[in-house]
Image (cartoon, rainbow, N blue to C red; front, side, top):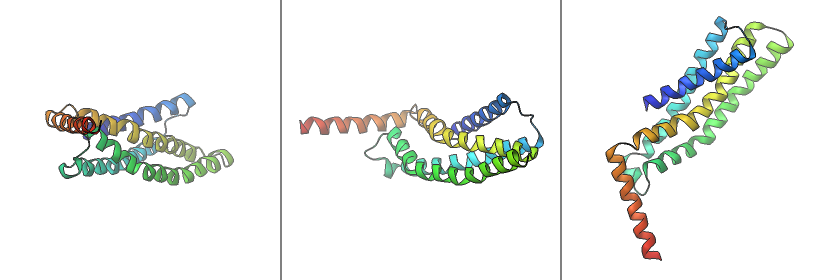
Length: 164
């Protein structure tokens, strides 16, 4: 789990810093504070999804599903929560970005709010589309997971053969 979470965090930082650089803003201490804040936010979101994955992939909950299907189910179960949390967090940040930076011209607010705005969006994306699938990909290479997935698929094919 940690490798997938770290890859997602690095992705978040690279994308946020890249957009920050493309826009041409100077990296100030406020921007660095924004970068560190989005790391914490993104990591929290990833931990929530990974906790659900751990719950769904325990031996008693895995029966009838492959490992990848259990991971997909966990992402689907936490998807609405992740999106709602991101929307609730991004609305005040957008207000700070618009009012503080555009209307009032406060550079410090612009720096931190832009980093937070981009980071929250990218962090939500990376948790759902990078961290969870990468974790599934890494775990599906393990021999025990392969055996369990193979057994599940064999049971399904035998069940389909008896129906036909």
